[in-house]
Length: 232
Image (cartoon, rainbow, N blue to C red; front, side, top):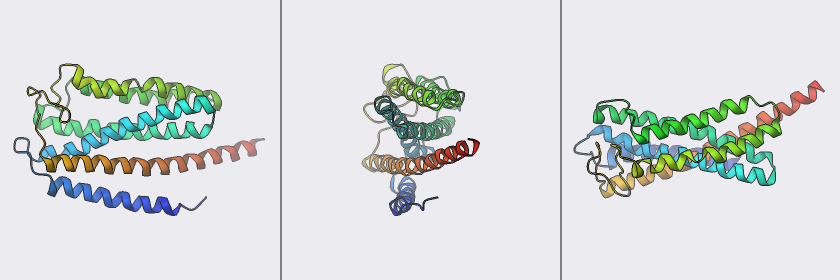
């Protein structure tokens, strides 16, 4: 097994330090929202996790397109890794949203358009993992994964624009807001700075996790090759 690259080690430490700084900004730099109180603090990581989830699915779609053009299996690994990470962060987004919703909406879950489309998006990519496991032929599995990642990405813009297209109680904090949305609030400059920094930190975390997951995938592929040689 190859030693972890120095650049990756540095990135690991930078990611940890940035994450600690973002957490400190959430609790000590951004002011307390006067109506919602402490529960509003979850908003910064809630939005950042949702951003990484959608970014991951975008990467997977791009990797799928490149794979179909070049037929290089490394792009299949990149797409697969991105979808795994996207599923985790989308789940974090949904869970933190439920934590926020309980005191604000008086319910852990409502069939609001944003919640519904986010859940559908999550299930679309869960299905990708399950269906992919049912295909034995590697080339066919990779081709299926590429096409599915491209088509599945249609669920991402639907989720993002759902609160701007449909009638919803989910607030649109950036880019306008419906005053009737339950939990809507206007961000102060310090809140906006904290949000943007959190998104930046989660983006760095995404890069770090992608690097680790691709390295793990390469080792797994190497193990599979060695197993096939032993069987021959």
